Length: 148
Image 1 (cartoon, one colour):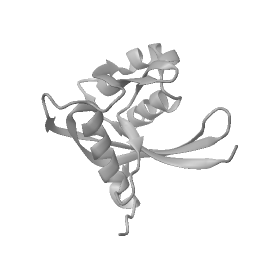
Image 2 (cartoon, rainbow, N blue to C red; image 1 turned 180 degrees about the vertical axis):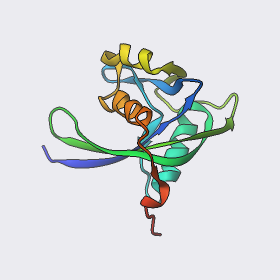
Image 3 (cartoon, rainbow, N blue to C red; image 1 turned 45 degrees about the vertical axis):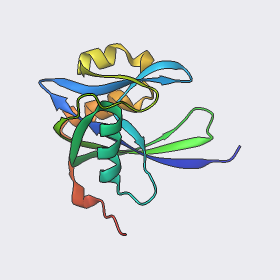
């Protein structure tokens, strides 16, 4: 077993007290997560977050602030995820757009609804990121420098 770090991004989108989540099929069954995914070669973290949100929800997302950077070692210790979570706004929807393979649906949930289904979260970062957002944790995007 060799250790590796995986860079991921996630989007926090709030509207009228509800948060945009996805239900996705995993090896452990259907799980809830923020729109999230891996950084692709050559793209910035902000670009990755906008792309992943569109692919998983059919909503165009504009990251505006960094909520936090989270390091989570998956049980078993073979992979550590480094997640950059962004807050922002939606710039519209692409009706009829097919969602990524494995995404069952996009849905809106309150913080209490999210907390009530923790056993079905993709990882412990789902509720932590919502709570950090609600606590007002926001950092300017210029904290991140992307060099090409």
